[in-house]
Length: 94
Image 1 (cartoon, rainbow, N blue to C red):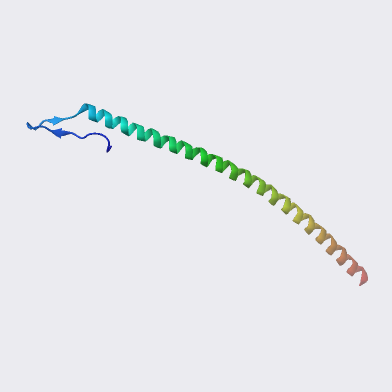
Image 2: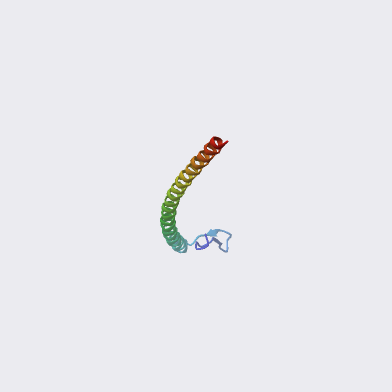
């Protein structure tokens, strides 16, 4: 993590860790993570809202398609009935 202080080596070759700087770095990184998580939660909420809206639109469109299909089927049945009547009439004329 970039905010955390690194280790240094003293004059005798021993590693030295500055605890205060390290702790400050950890706190800074946690604050950044907290802010980022909050942003992600807001985005998730917005996306969930958008998805709910899209789901409602899909439901409405599906119902419209169902009604249109029903209407088309009724019209086709009327046309078929009319054609059958014409065929029967033509058979009678022969």
